[in-house]
Length: 133
Image 1 (cartoon, rainbow, N blue to C red):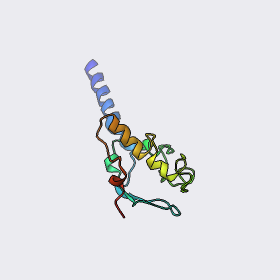
Image 2: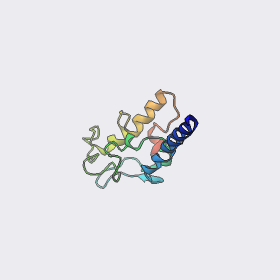
Image 3: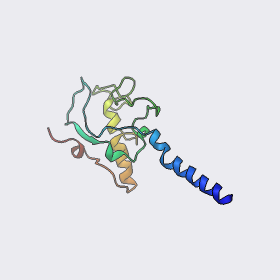
Image 4: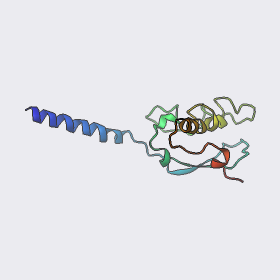
């Protein structure tokens, strides 16, 4: 009886560990190119980005307004990082700050924090992300 109960509990734990996460899995796009929204003036080239290279991260780390259920919207979606003005580029609502802010929810901020923690990370310098035009 105890052996059967133990086997059932271990089986249930394995199902929870491996099957349940796949129910909530998001089919993230593969490689993509990040471009500024219409109306924004880019001083550097677009950035190649790999979702697969970031698969170990929780989606909410970057998509901080996502509720975990619906469609994930882009950074330039209404109500997020819509300010494309040069004057407001340091504001949290700016498209520029979504990728360059010092906080760990931006690309550069996260990569720099990982570098500081001596963890393997991506680029932290402008030219490493933005190819020359």
